[in-house]
Length: 235
Image (cartoon, rainbow, N blue to C red; front, side, top):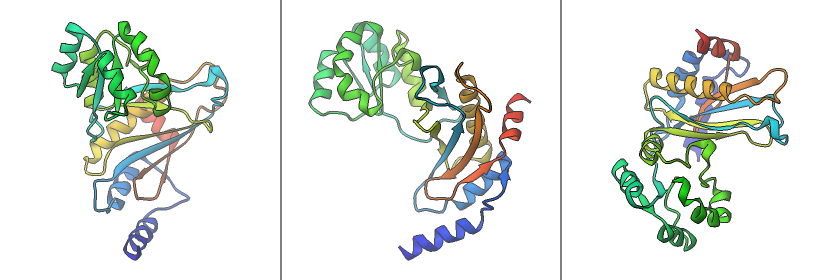
């Protein structure tokens, strides 16, 4: 524990808590502070000026990061016949119909993303109490209920990230690994922030993106210069 304490103390010493960092400087600092014995995830947190308790202020969606997440994603697909073969060819880890539903009900939840063709929702709907609490229920708004299963599987495997605002209006996500190049991380952050901007709900009033911070799994958070970040997206 002493070694962890010393490491964190050193990392905190490299961060100016009062400073609002430019994206490039923040990424460089986060990478230099990521000294754990594993490849730390680089995480973003965005405080939004919304109240998710209202239906017209929900923020939820999916974004494909240009450089992936660095995480191995296991994908389950509900499909039959030709669509099942397409899913398998695209790299799905589990493919089935009623048999897959039975596996899930029996406790086999060894997957990170669940995709279904529209005709399978009668089967999938019965799994709502199991998949829903785990955030795995297929949803057409997220592109996980689709006839284009091959495309959806490839997106999930390639680095698509689901986001959803919490009750406090904060959105969290992993945007890569500390081992990624600074350029790759910057591109991923910009893609994620752009997706959040596009998802701005009709009911959001005043300042939409209030705060943005970046950190690694075991490192301190850095506040980003929001105005500069948004300006960079529009450049």
